[in-house]
Length: 287
Image (cartoon, rainbow, N blue to C red; front, side, top):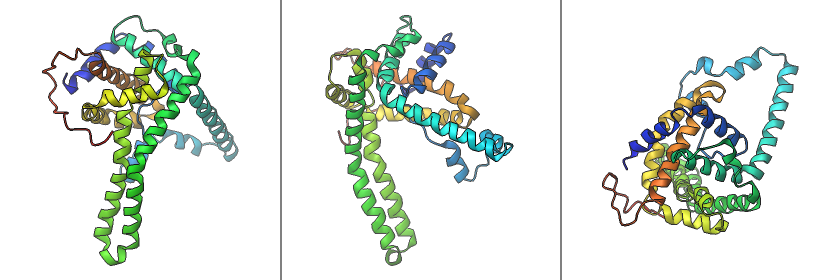
């Protein structure tokens, strides 16, 4: 399947179901079940010299409040944030696995329902442990980049007077890139863990994580290209005020991600897919 076909099929899946999908994904997000890679695009653009103007509506609202009101709302938002973090830690894994079930039913048009996201709530302990194991694996692999990256960066800063500012800057940038590469590869390698756990509830946490790594052998580059295809949409969605853009982005991306999983997990091994245009035979740098 060509990369663009994932996007097209995701759009077709969502036709006529946007209300259900947005509502379900929104609640799943509150419960910590949406693991779409996000970042502060507004801050990134501002540092690049882009004036977002009226996009910073929350700051503009605070500017018209009294200091006492702004402080009270800020405290309330912090408390709400802490509560959401606790909820995410407890229910995030189970909700994530349930959202995988929802997207499977959406993909196969087998009556997807809002209650699908609660399918694995009878296995809260296992899903919490799976999240911990998955995070541990990713963190350990990340050390392969963080440790040498930090050494290179600090060495470059210490020797900047001897090697020159330009060469020092190049080394710092190289160190920063080196720090994120193993983590990125690990994130992709273990990204199918909860899809696998949903379909194989008797698997242990370690088995599901290991199965994800094995499933992604030869497919990491392909998923990375899919990430890149969605990057432009993510930037646009992120700068739309109050998260409105993300209400539409998250379901779209998750639908495409499930189609990707389905295309590599449920394919006849004896059938050759001639539509794949990317050579993935040598894309595994590690894992």
